[in-house]
Amino acid sequence: DAGVTQSPTHLIKTRGQQVTLRCSPKSGHDTVSWYQQALGQGPQFIFQYYEEEERQRGNFPDRFSGHQFPNYSSELNVNALLLGDSALYLCASSSGQGMVQPQHFGDGTRLSIL
Amino acid sequence: GDSVTQMEGPVTLSEEAFLTINCTYTATGYPSLFWYVQYPGEGLQLLLKATKADDKGSNKGFEATYRKETTSFHLEKGSVQVSDSAVYFCALRRTGRRALTFGSGTRLQVQP
Image 1 (cartoon, each protein chain N blue to C red):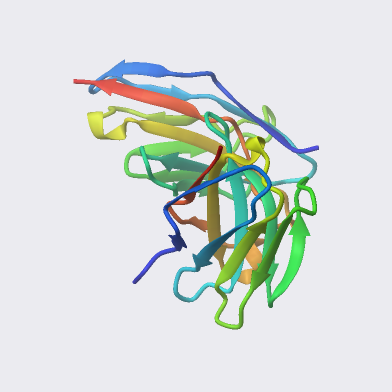
Image 2 (cartoon, each protein chain N blue to C red):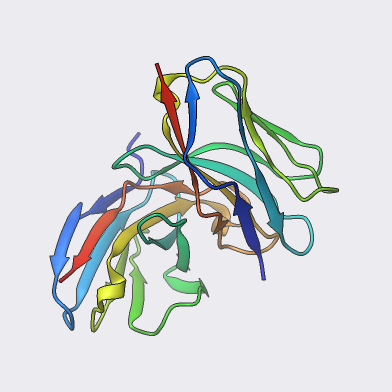
C-alpha cells in the first residue's frame, strides 16, 4: 500500500522563477493539504484541496496556488520565487475532508532558491 | 489564533532513560491533539493522537494524555532507544477545521 508520494525530491531554482511540485495521496484518500516547513521550524499550512477545489487557505500570498486532479493527486505552484521560499514542502493526505481522520505526510520536496 | 508551544531542544538522553517532552496549546473549543515524529531526511509520521479531554494516545511505547484543565499534551516514554532519535512535533486541529497547527519541534538525541 503506497503512502503519500511527492516529486521531485530536491529542486534548485533562482529568484523570480516559477516551480511546480507534485503529490499523489495515499490510496483511499481524497483530500490533499500542503505545508511549508522552514529549516528548524514546524510546518505551516498553505492550503487544502478536496473535490478539486481549494477548501481552506493559510496565511500565504497569491503567488502560492494549487490544483487537484480527478484522481485526487495535486500540484503546488509557486510564482516569482523569493529567497524566503526556500523550505521543505510537505504534502499530506487524508479522507473525510481532513477534519476527522489524521493526515498522512509524504517525505517532502526540498526547494532551494539561489 | 491557535498556537502550540513545545519545550526547546535538543533533549539529550542516555539509552533507557525516561523521556518527557512538554507541549501546551492555545485554541478555542476542544481541538484534536497529535504528536508527529520526523526522522532525518523524511516527512512526518503520526505517532499518536487524542480527540477529547482525558483521552490517552499511545503507540510504540510513547504516551500522551489530553489535559484540558492545563491545555497540555506532554509526550512520555519510559525507556528511550537510540532509534528514537528524531524531531518530535506537537500539533492541534480545531474541530471543524482542516489545517494542522504545529509547534516548532523538539529534537531528541539518545546516546548509547
